[in-house]
Image 1 (spheres, rainbow, N blue to C red):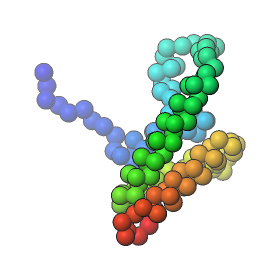
Image 2: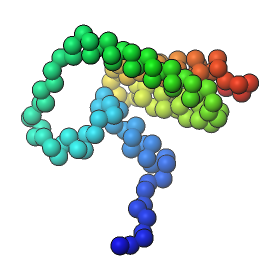
Image 3: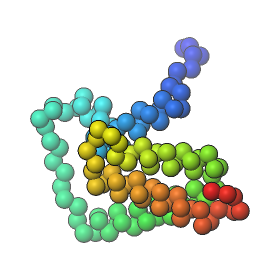
Image 4: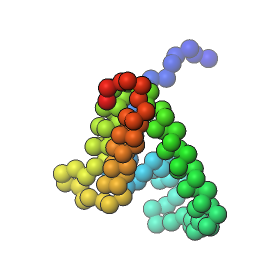
Length: 125
């Protein structure tokens, strides 16, 4: 065995690669993995969510939003700036077709950051 550590891209490159998946409304899905597993013509059959599953999903989203707000309330100003940059990154850019879900996602990100500001311990935001 070798003791060589794997080489990872620098953080800015990792962020760029992660966020680039959002350009085509691809979300956070593992696009590269999906391309290797299915043919371009194949569409996975995804059953509709039941009412109970939708309710559980809503509950989980509410819980995650509140946890995120709690975490954002204690981050540095630089980290808040980075979160705002990420929201701006997924907002429609020149040359791209605006998509209502992307616009809403960016708006929601800013809203979460602002809500976290109400709980910051005397830190300037």
